[in-house]
Length: 280
Image (cartoon, rainbow, N blue to C red):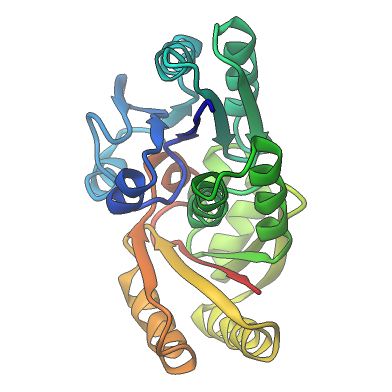
């Protein structure tokens, strides 16, 4: 019986131990800083990026992996007769899924490409559950069904401390960005249905804290939580506050705290803090 191997782009918030445990192949995304291209997990780390971004002459730009990297990985993994399940970040923020689909058509290996409709640790939740299905002898279809189930029970909230990168990257208009900077507006975003939505906007850090309090209340009153992650961009003050509250609510659940990947940090900007979890 042929094996099923998992491929994911580097936006997936997987730890090194998880990548090794589940034998996941990571295809890195790229970020360009002042004319130099850096490859995630190869020539730049999550921890190195924020300082480099802060010191850059202009906003870094991001790009999806070259199609050849996907083709090479698919062909190599399929040499022993295995098929591949390739999981990508959501199409609304990256064309990676389309590159992977083109590569799948070019590969000699049987490849199924799946848009996770999320990213970061939310994507990792799905991949880990899919890997468990495959370990238990499940099919690609069964692994995808499990990922869709996890997605339906997942939440992703992202607090933006400074709108500069969102404005510079063209994701909100410049007038709104200037006004927000003037009034010290903070924004809480939520990802669902594969899209980014504004959940709240308010003035100052207190507005964000109030929104986090509401989110944690809803979280504690809802279905049982199975896994929690916090990702950030040099936002440890906010991370520590959030983690302390979560540890009180869920003392038995390990909380995976990560500096997020460059491709996401470029869009969110410094000080961003993201809560990701999924439930039963």
